[in-house]
Length: 116
Image (cartoon, rainbow, N blue to C red):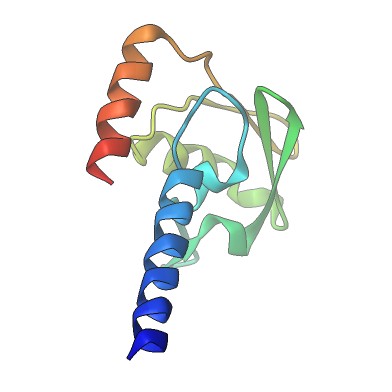
């Protein structure tokens, strides 16, 4: 019974850690884009299955698709995901600048973390 409780607590902690990793806290973290889905040739797919997501610097993410023809679809999916990011398309990748966190955003994040 104790082992079952420990397993349940571990699952809950892992889930909470994953939720926290998706929060936008002013630094570039590829996990921010985990919930973004893209329409790729008629089927909805996770962004990380059609592109490589990496950090360019502390404030910038870069998304490099394996199929360069879907760059505009990736930018549209990121914009439509309502996570507050504005992607910029380049020749072969999408750049995403992470805005600095403000006092108002900190308060909003505190509310979200409390809810989680």
